[in-house]
Length: 78
Image (cartoon, rainbow, N blue to C red; front, side):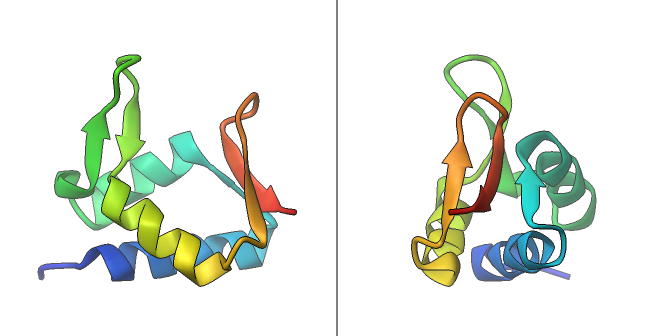
């Protein structure tokens, strides 16, 4: 089955709603295994990251109510 960036973002949003936090490392692992490597890339620091289109769709879903915690590498409610 082919997934879309919106479907991956919806999973991220539901995880954030259910747990209150979404750690990037755990999200990358889950997305890679369940949605496919096409939604993952290696950033300039050499770390695996979530596709920019997925993050854009995720941002639309949380509408600014979630914030990226740079030091902890997670999203949480703001």
